[in-house]
Image (cartoon, rainbow, N blue to C red; front, side):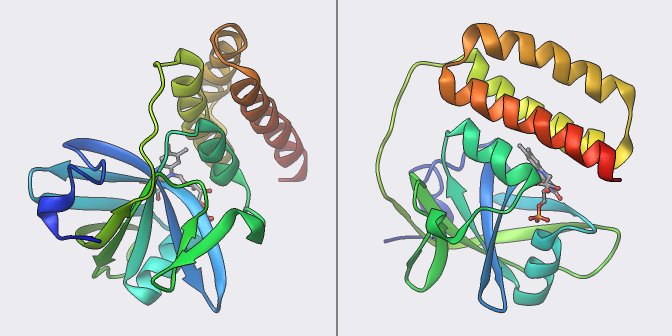
Length: 197
Ligand SMILES: Cc1cc2nc3c(=O)[nH]c(=O)nc-3n(C[C@H](O)[C@H](O)[C@H](O)COP(=O)(O)O)c2cc1C
């Protein structure tokens, strides 16, 4: 087990915005959603927008687990949907993604407002496996597409939809089957949510 700020580099949380999947819990239900942790040396903070499960759970419980993974498919999936229980496991009684390469428990004293900007502190974490691969433009773009999809659904701005269409062309060219599937599922959800809302 690794503890505190000095372990952050080893746990994969570096300077800049670290895109992780936050697992949180409310009444024994585990939630997973992408979250950016901003690090500048020893200073770390998150920005949470009102209206998500992650916002509610962090506000209520005062902690979240950052799951470090570079599986873009998981970012796309958790951005718009809940994951079924078989995707989760527990360590030290904390909810984690089975596929996490590392996890870090952060504590966070947040107070309610439209947007929470809160300092966070690493408590403990663990590297579960070290995975490496060549950069894939398709995988990076799936994460961009997941961001654009959440913004498109919240704001309905045409420019986000255009970005998604452009991104899909590049993912189809540069990504593998998992990235193409992630993008197809994002577009299907956008289509179905657009009809519902
Ligand atoms: C890569 C990525 C990073 C994100 N970062 C944040 C963030 O830092 N803060 C936030 O409030 N939402 C962020 N989002 C959007 C949430 O993940 C999204 O609103 C999600 O639907 C929340 O799900 P939940 O209701 O299960 O918590 C991000 C989305 C993506 C794809």
